[in-house]
Length: 432
Ligand code: DOR
Image (cartoon, rainbow, N blue to C red; front, side):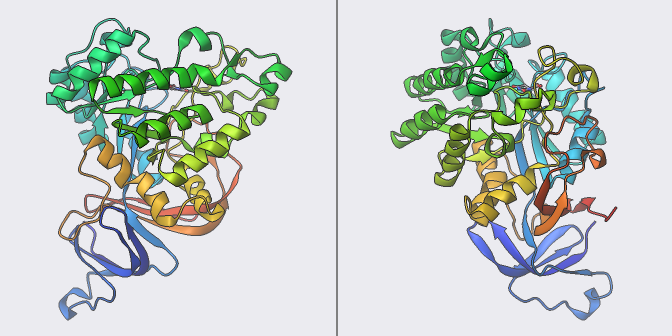
């Protein structure tokens, strides 16, 4: 258990509105005090490690509400152990994992299995997300009450849309009874089918079938209207287009119960990176145009998009080191997210408080889970970062089993130094 005094870091806790230089004192794994200047009692001096926090930020442990841990079923890509090790080295103290495993997390035994594995081998807290439909087949609803009772915190068919509007309506109505948020993977398959990348000048140049922005945004429109109709909460996953942003902004302004996330690749990259046919950039929804990227950043800045999730989607070389057409969609993200989010602060898009809120309290509130804040008396769960440390991302040093990181070799600014989870140092950065 940690006994540590971090002196003089910028302590940012969006949940309480705290953002000031302070000392944080942790005794036996609990946050004893957060105050501008703390003097240790004489009897504590020996066992307490003092860390100079000057120039660093001490923030709540990050919470990623959208990751794929691949277990059960695809352990060669990732396991709950490697995925959560990857999470803590990226500064995350908690993750919510998507149900597109094998078997699908559409019933209590799978949810229970995930929680058991997380407890046995996990480095951080894991919140399972259940499937909307049995087997993700889009035909029949799963038993939401059973999933909730077993520990699921939300439902989604992520990886696939719920094509049947009536089923989505029923899902929204049913989810409300169990206080579950419905997470929408918004995609109109009739518009996206066969598409490999964003539809635009680049897809024409490369001769690859495109996925138009409307494939996402038309479904966002439907789901916003279903949320309005039912009064149930909807969360739009991985927002990538300007039109989706516009629709969500408008719905929010009218009080529709909607929240939204985007991922670092949508505000960092655009479809021009595909010019070399590198499958590391293949993802669904696809990397969009520069205008879309700009709109996503604006939406983060004005709060239209509430939070940043990674959509960490590990794949092995078997699925990635092949022709573009056959390659799997998805990129890993847990170990590269913080410097990219920090980049938005350096660019002036987000304030430090806004960036940290998007990684902590905002997703915690969306899923109503008890993480993402600093509290005196609570087990110490925090992340210490150096927002100004410059380095080159090296995916070979990652804890994830997979290497499909599009940011390998990129120069960034912002490093995670320590992740404390429930009083223990789950990750400590060591110079290579
Ligand atoms: O690119 C993606 N990969 N998008 C998804 O929605 C699912 C994910 C996966 O599971 O690989």
